[in-house]
Length: 213
Image (cartoon, rainbow, N blue to C red; front, side):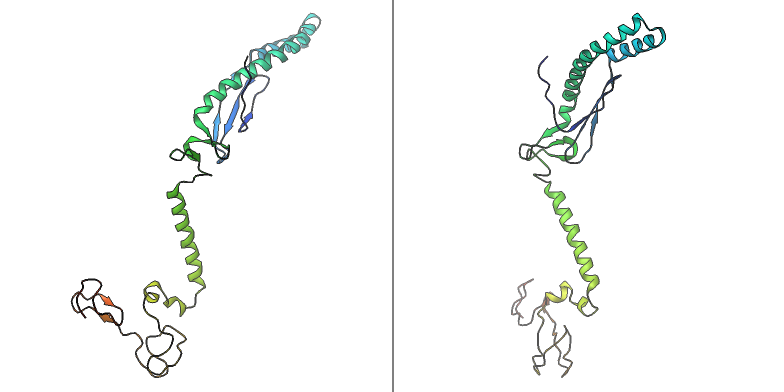
């Protein structure tokens, strides 16, 4: 019999009565269990044990001999059963050439890259996870903001926010619409005379329709 090739991602569930093996993914832990294969020597040993217990004598000596024969025969049958189970499980797993992990084809193998998903993650999954993580961070950051700071939404901070009043020069502590010192309007919204799009102060041509302002 040729040498038995074994893999690390398996567990041996065999007993005296028969053989069964489990092969699992190094990454996610899911896997496959081979069908139970009865051991002929295990069944014969049980019969001899029963006979020796009832009658003794010649059957008792036969049972002792059966133990020695059973041991060698069981090991051979075990190796053969393992080889067969490993071959059946092989199509369901791939070994990553980068980290040498055995991973399941269904969930943890990146076919496009030829690597496991630990070494070559699915970019779409990673992007979605990154967006979700970023959203959670923003929720927590927003929850910690004061009501005044919450006014600094994206729509606000894309506008030009002045640090001091252009009329009286008073420093501004908040993103106010009017100067708290002199009452001057700080946000003079301008709109295109043609298409009505909102314009930044000092705009000479509309960035939307090109009309001169």
